[in-house]
Length: 254
Image (cartoon, rainbow, N blue to C red; front, top):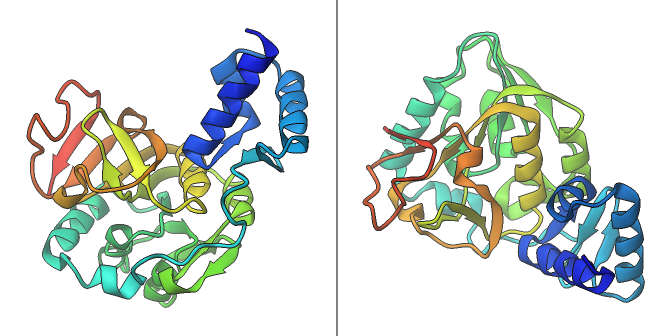
């Protein structure tokens, strides 16, 4: 592959995903870390990307955590019965002694009432999860650092991602803004996406929690493919037109 074409693909990937790690770029392009680093350095000098530790981000995206269009409490108040059913089904996959990563979404936070009496270790950057489990007698909490995103009660950014890559977990539970019929799992918040990807990398198994409204939902940043998850936990069986039945993922209906 010619250098110009390789660098063009890097820029396209960074702008599509919001950020890319060196490891991901090496796998995608089939080149060495040294080559990718040289490309990133040059693209950063040209202003096409922003060079960050371990990879690159889209310079059009502010490094400050963006406010969500709707506050966490407002989102959590909607669709409560479906969210609760999904959360209870997800919590049923957890065994005593498990180490689990809990994402910052409202469906994941809804798992907390079903985990309060469990002997588990929870890794999270969700302040809603921290508040719900802080006094749970047998729950050990590992709170990831990062930049505060006040209206969504969470910590995000490069520090959160770096902290997460230092741990290993048996399970991860993630939310999303949308799931396309072809299996692309989407989000709308650039500062969240690298954290979600890191959770997928450091957990032995990951489950996606999404109610029927999230199929297709919304989002313009691809977090991962649906087959990166062990299962999709939702409140209704997706129709063939909503989700390709040929996708290699278990659909668990709460």
